Image (tube, rainbow, N blue to C red; front, side, top):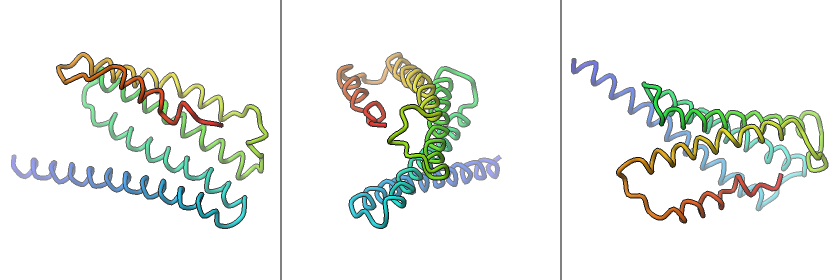
Length: 168
């Protein structure tokens, strides 16, 4: 009995280390992105490649992390459904980021001049899933005995989220 418990604990520790590494990689990518934008090395084409590649990589990492979160729930309950909704929204965001970057990098389309693209459809479809999942998590949280805080603070953070203020 102890041997199987020990093996399970080692697996959990390895999984947590993998997730920690992914968070560190994401942080490093964001830092690298900021540095590259400040220094602007190379041509406009290189900067376009960087600006189109980083969101895809970060969305892919987020997709994997959310997949492991949804998979961690053994029973199909309210919390799992909320995380599944967010996961679906992020998968659609990953598809949109990939399409956007592919159109700009491989097809040579200047996306600044395009009014609507197929990526926009995936972004629009992703929002309801993400919003529903976040509302479900917030509703589930308010139904617990945890300290609630002020609702106004949640609304301020929600409205200040960068995803809602994108200039694409």
